[in-house]
Image (cartoon, rainbow, N blue to C red):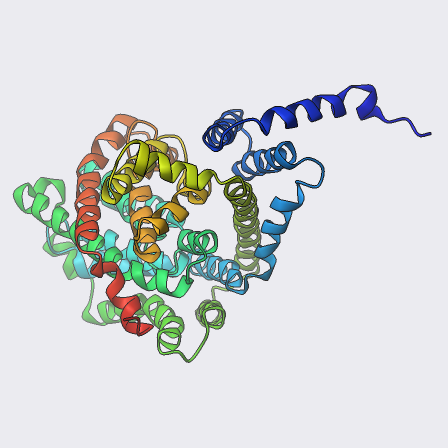
Length: 466
């Protein structure tokens, strides 16, 4: 008879006793213990997907015994059958091709020349740059990196207030998870089982509205105090010929053409979502090749980064699906719903506001992806049972996580900015700089809550939803 080390160490006995104890707990206590275990595991420094996945599998085995691990495994296998997930590496690839080949540099040079003649014009141009970068990449980190390396040195050199430009770059980069093709909305679509196309379209008007509010704020501040954003001198403007301006305009319109080449066929129903992402990746590669910038180094960096980020998101989705299956399997969602609506006597809108507040609190120590995979198994079914639109809620989640991403003292974006900023921009400057932009984003969030059609009008129009 072979030696069984688990029996010798008493692991089988310990596991059996733990399983018996777990089955005596109520749904509420199971939910609390699962979330507490996950948060404790995250605090040990484990990667997000490892912390969530371990808790899911161990909880399943404790609750259902041997074979319980099949529940999270079966849920995670749905990922392999989810065809729209192919858009994820294709859009990430497209974004890195455009940034690594220097096409993003051309964009900023265009804004620099065309907007530099007005007070705050370069800061306004930086917001425009961030919108286009968001439409090319779908990740806020990419916008932050490009803004900090391209826009920040130029703005400092032109005498812009360091707190103003720190806030501009952080706020502008946050648009990457709202303006399509948003990678975060792809993750939300997978977890909420919502159409990616509708979510992307729902993010268009809110994203443009938020960018517009940022621009209005910058213009008003610089109108009141021109020293915050001085305009280019007449001598500097005269050095740029009309021919160079037109050439820069053509270079700046290239990313717009790339975005249109994939979105127009998709919106008109000529291509599927995955086909549109493939078109975008191919057109971006051809554009870089046509400009003579698609070098071996650009190709290697792009492929390496695409593989790294795509794999990270795949693992996170796998863990989220596994956790959600176990959490839903024990009926914890219904218990939490009863706690809010029956025990506390809260109305649907009060529950919704509590959810948004919880995102703001979690944003002090988690990034947007981690927040999504932790709370989606609880919040998505609850939102649906309360009668709210999941597409609309996806936009609310995204805006709230943008705000949480930048809220002191531990907002994720604040530390990214500190790592990329020059020494003269201190952590105090970064904290102070973001306060007015957080106020603008809270205003945008309130507008979307009061007027849901801002998010829902475009997807309803395109998909003919009554």
